[in-house]
Amino acid sequence: MDVLEFNTILSLLNKKAGFDPDVVRRENIKRAVENRMTYCGAPDMKAYLPLLINSAREMGELIEEVIVPETWFLRDREPFKFLENYIKTDWQPNQFGKILRVLSVPCSTGEEPYSIAMTLLLSGLSTKEFQIEAVDISNESLAKAKNAVYGKNSFRGAVLGPYWQYFKQEPEGLKVVDEVAEVVSFSQGNILDGFNVVADGIFDIIFCRNLLIYLDKDAKQKLIKILDQRLSMNGIMFLGHAETGIISDSRFNRVDHERAFAFKRKVHEKKQTKTVDHKPFSAIKTGRKKIRMAVSKIPEKVALPIHNELDDKHKHKHKNKPNLQSSIEKASLLADRGRLDEAMAICQDCLSSGGPNAEAYFILGLINHASGNDVDAEQYFNKTIYLQPDHYDALVHIALIMENRHDVDSANVLRQRAQRAKQKNG
Image (cartoon, rainbow, N blue to C red; front, side, top):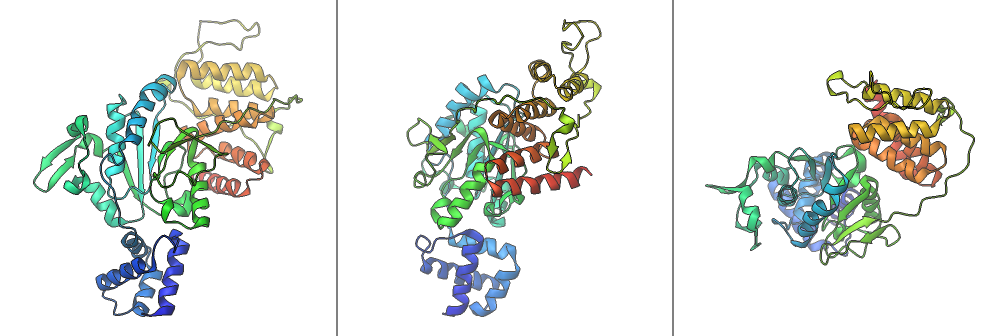
């Protein structure tokens, strides 16, 4: 064996995928390298090494060769039972009108994200009420996932019951019906590369099962931090059964469902609101630049009438009700004049009457941030980004909050996203 080249390959795998040599045995890696050498026609490791260094795809194929994907529909069953119950008893009653966003990573050959989609449909959600992003490093696995046709090994004796309605028999196997296949968006990438891999935004549900067990200590911490940054304030994260001891007890609570292996972020007590002299929002700075209150234009055809609470006598006027955009503009103007309570009332009225709105959430975030209530401010800014992932000002404000917490890495990541948003929007 070419010792020097093999050690270089081990180093590359550790840097790219964070493999722990105590978990992923050298013999397994050696066998995987030899298999890829045969496939690529490389006579030895010296010839194979340049192929690996210069090809992200080959690196992905080698990583998959090392980690033999073990997946099937409804694997471990209990996580999906908990998910169905959570949607029915918690999400639907409390999040009416909000789109549920789910991340499945690594998604392998697709059984997991399709199982999630089926579970959400059985929970009563329509295909318009949720989005699933599925990410994997292997193009070969993703091709199988997109094909959505599966043999016996993908079922492994699972009792599917009502799930059978989402399959149809074809000559080569059971195919996932279009209703399910079309709600899962597959993309290629390495989650350890962070925010540049998967679609921008925050997720309400994250499935990341049986990846952490392969990683060394540094890679574990990096991945958990990435997942933490992508999880909504009230989001739920699913791990593999052997990974539950890795999550920090100070950050997450384990959900009360046996063998679900799911965790929910701890909600810390709100800081007491500081008494401050209200300054105009034009004086609140974003980094070194002053904030500009950018109110999105809302087409007249979707404008919703709401009550006007901004007349001089603070009475409701039912004549000539302003549309949603007009109300948000007035809320922004009131906030700029220091009339924060009135601005907050207008935003809450907009949300109550017209449903989720990025700019209403953003103004509420600014009000709380200006008042020193960063806990609520962060939640509102996250809601803004959920609805509008490229909202520059919200991204910058969360970065400022992270800096105040001395979380420099998170702040830098958010500033990078803000910069991309700024370039995108000109």
